[in-house]
Image (cartoon, rainbow, N blue to C red; front, side, top):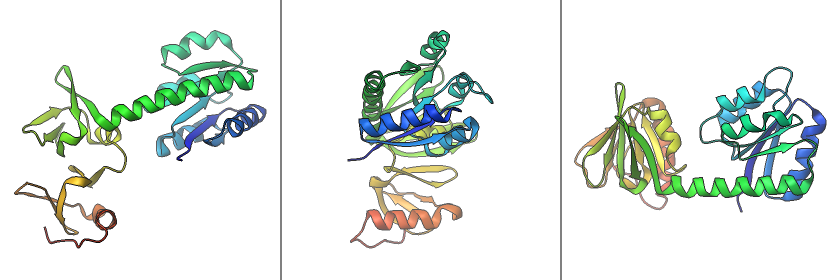
Length: 240
């Protein structure tokens, strides 16, 4: 069973030790701790953990500032000795607010609440994504995405059911919305669903039912080729 990846940021070593012990006792939580907040934030941006435990009053930076800088999909719990920040925490959509010193039972309740939110988010992201088109939010079923193309300040999301959605959401943001492992960035301008690849080489890809081939960027070529070979193990690549 896959563990829930967690990061704890607190400039007090004892606080990190308590969270580590509680995570071990709870089970199924893969925790990494950081006493330097900015280093922890960079790790969060790089590896996108499932859950974050975040102190507020720290010497080098306020935890509220870190919360504002987190990727929008992050699920986090504030852990602080300063109860006056509770309202700020919930305004930032924190899952819970643990007031130090907190007991294991209170910690476990907060984690269970977080895990329910994480599971709900995963289910939603697996089924569909939501992007902005002009002033509206548009829901697109993931299995309806044929491919995605960057066009100057816009992104085109081509749909298998026909047509496309033109959105100002950038490629990086859209890629973060897509289910991990189901889509590939093959070029600075293209993202494709792995399951809809018909033939491929190290230079281009043809999607099922499409007459055109999409180019593979040179910097992506080896990774794309190896990924598709592994995905299609037992079948041979074709010249697109």
